[in-house]
Image (cartoon, rainbow, N blue to C red; front, side):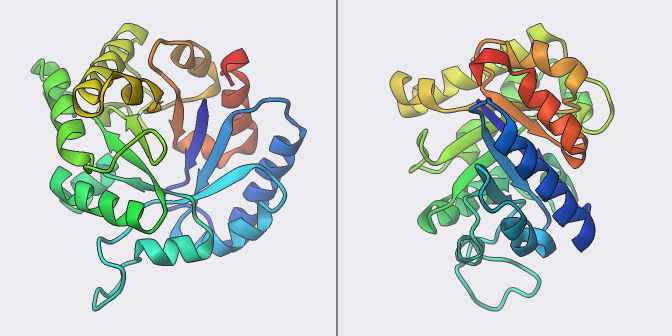
Length: 250
C-alpha cells in the first residue's frame, strides 16, 4: 500500500520543513508499513530531504523534463532529481495536461527518461466531468494508460494514479463502484500490455479529494493499492489519518 502526498505549488521553506518533520516523526512512531512518499515543489526538495532523514519516507518530485541536460530554461531533468535524492516523480498529472498542454506521448517520453535516470514514476490518468457525463470514462482512462506508459514500464518502476479531473480539489468523489470499475479496467489494460503477473503487481492509486473521511472506503476496494493525496497531504494529521484508514492492508 502506497500513501503519497502531492504538495503541488504550496509551501515556503519554513512550512515545508515543519510539515516534513511532522510527517517524519509520525511515520517513525507508526506501526504501519505503508510506503510513504512526499512530493514537494522543486524549491523544497533539498530541505525536505534533510527533514525526512531517518524516516522511511521517499522523496518525489512533481514533474521532470525529457532531456538529461541542455538549453531548457526553467526545466528540471530526471538526473538532477536523482542527484537531489528523489526516488519518485509524478508525471502526467491532470494539471500538467491541462495547464501545460501535456500529451500522453510526452508523458511517455518523460517516463522513459525518468526510468533511465533511476527514478520511479507515478503516472496520472483521469477523465474530465464532460468526458464522464458523455460516458467516455473507461475509454479515456484506457487510452491514457496505453499511450502514457513507456515500453520499459514494470511494477518495480511504475505506479498508476487514477485521478478523475472533476474530483481534484472539489470535495467531490466518484462512488466506490465507479472507482472500482476504473481500477479494474486499468488492471485489464495493464495485463494486455505487461502480462497478468506483472500487471497484478503494479500499484494503482486513487486520487481526487482523498481525505480521512473517505479513505477507508476507497482504500479497501479491489485493485486500489493506495492513494495520491493533494490538499490533505498538507496537514500531517490528515495525511497520517489516511494511512491509518488503510487498515491492515498497509
